[in-house]
Amino acid sequence: MYKIAVIGDHDSIYGFEILGLSTYPIQYPDEARQLIRHFYNTGKYGIIYITEEMAAEIKEEIERYQTLTIPAIIQIPGITGNTGAGIENVKKSVEQAIGSDILFSKE
Image (tube, rainbow, N blue to C red; front, side, top):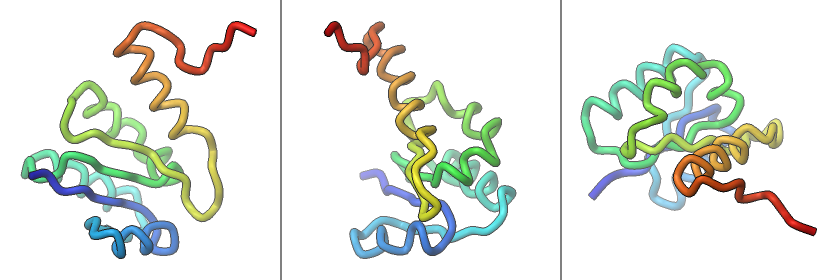
């Protein structure tokens, strides 16, 4: 069974620990890069949640794993608010998978 990791600043992710997820509070982009590489190399993590703010700092690292099924890297809002990057990435992934815009409305 795969584990779920949550990466970001402490204030944004500490609540996920209560849910039983593995939390990794970090301050610097290099820490996030190293964690993602470690998670990929161990093969123990199926989902990696990362705050949108930190993901923006390591965009090139996330893109390396974008085409892989596992681990799935999903951006979540931090305490600073929602930038929309997480929703946009999920939208792009679904569009690639089904060939259609999921937010398009014919009204």
